[in-house]
Length: 338
Image (cartoon, rainbow, N blue to C red; front, side, top):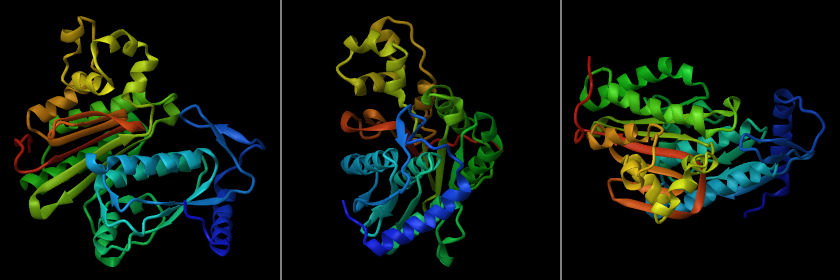
């Protein structure tokens, strides 16, 4: 792990102390309880720790392990009470899903009074993608003049009742990018709604802790939109474990990846004979089987699923939360109403 020079470390600490005085009136104690139930250390003299991002910051299966390790390191340092300096200078390839996951982790830790600073990629293409992603609508940071006008958005909310007024216009915009028509898409709205309900009802230990992000990136030249939905809750597998359901069905499957893959395809009842409520997962998968969306990817706990590429694997670095990625382009079935 890269160490900061003394002068830079001192500058960053002094800058964040000013923000800290404005944003917190905490009692004198050496920890607080985070949303995950872990003890989060509160340091009287916070230190910055630098974390260097991988060159390929994408969640494609071949690169997901090193990116998930990067995300996990950020979480671990934040839970230990360190402020974090994100070093993205060496990033050459960056994708929308990884940006949304990064923002989700940052937002979660900022609520625990952890401060962030960092450097953008030196690679111009990677920097442009980062600036156009919508990330800097939620974080301090300059955006170059060429990237200030962008249809890309990352919606952030923790209340299931507030999503409609924010989500509906963005779905309309997506339909316009893909099909050239500013229109409704009930199937897409329903699928995203299930993701939100799962986050609000099952992913977090308390309602107050609920926080999810939805990233939407537009590509006018190819008539395509890419979507990322994620939360930093407990994850689908851990939720099943806590509710005692996993212990009832584990013997029927070889691993968690097979359990989750079957849950999306709604085959658990037929395979086990046990009563099964899918928690909305089959509704999400139905968007894919009906070709409303394509390229569906799910990462949660120790499971990675890529339905296009038929990847269903357990992974060594677990992600505490749930991540969905999909896209809609001209190869999909039109599913909109004016």
